[in-house]
Amino acid sequence: MERSQSSLDERIQLIMTTVAEGDQRPGFLREGTSTTARDLAVRQGELTGASWNFVRQVHGANVCVIDQPSDHVVAADGLVTAATDLPLAMLGADCSLVALASSEGVIGIAHAGWRGLLGGVIEATVEEMHRLGAKNIEAIIGPTIGPECYEFSAADLEPLIDRYGPSVAHSEGGRVYCDLPEGVRLALGVAGVDRVRRWGGCTACATDLYSWRARCEIGRHALVIYRTSSA
Image (cartoon, helix red, strand yellow):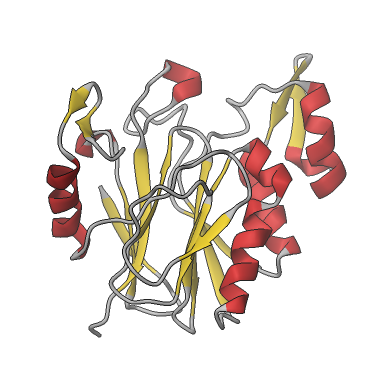
């Protein structure tokens, strides 16, 4: 597990879990090992002071705004809050996980595979943050499959190229690859977020992160963002 914080507000904290912490899906603790939701919530609460708030990720562009703990039944790929002590979590095993922090205290998080990226989940999450009063926003792009490992269908890439430009794709040896982190960066730029940093490597290359595409792993690591009420 790694920890970081926002450069805009020291109260905004980030956690990135790894394979060492096990499968972070609600109801699981380690891949293939079931545990109770309560046990997992207790463990997560030990890390952040409160249980994590999830959504049912569907590779779409819906964004959920919450001001109190959620039971993760809403189908969405973005979460936003202006509340303190309310950790927001997204799960991944190749898709891009993006945490968003603002100097105004509004935070957000998004899960962006190529479908969600094409659907506008990044822009929609930033828009909801603006609606809650965020103006100065930074983005932290967490674990994401790298362009060297994401071979793609040329036909499926065409809509992404049309939306964000040719740098979302590259070819090598007759094969076509999708640069998902670059697509996320470009989407953030469209949304007006130019303060962007990477945190976490390629999920397919890093054995301490889960990857469905490289290793068919069913487990999920998590990226978590939260703002504490104490200085």
